Length: 150
Image 1 (spheres, rainbow, N blue to C red):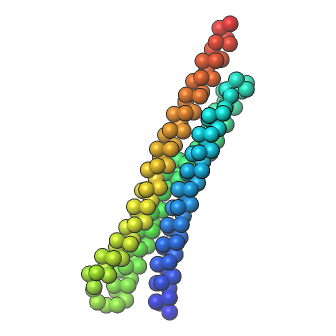
Image 2 (tube, rainbow, N blue to C red):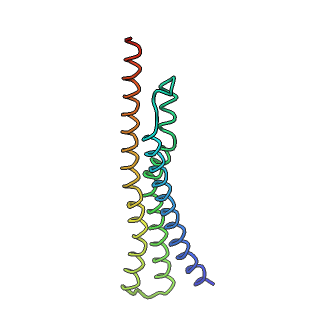
Image 3 (cartoon, rainbow, N blue to C red):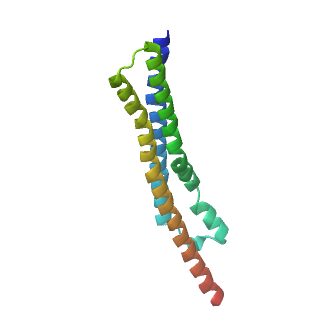
């Protein structure tokens, strides 16, 4: 019975944590592409108020920020679970086999690596999008200043 639980936990670790991190990566990429396409087509002259423009420009970029800041924690959770499984297996067997320990720890650490691999591009994407928002808002401000001076 305990063997089944351990096998299930290992599968849940691989598919659960890794699946969640892959999903987070796909969502980040999708939102980044969607925002870049929107920024390329936005017409600032259609907006009557700066705040309305800013709300539309910043729509969904907080999700990218949340993914970038939380992906390492999801990976760390996978690592902790993997290490717990390795130690539990060691204690259950009663014998210490260095090869099994190293393989178990290496498998656990892949979750942390995957979390970092997801987080770093998400933070870069978020920074790029914020800069685009600043530039578009500056263009809006320049246009409004020209209208006001006429």
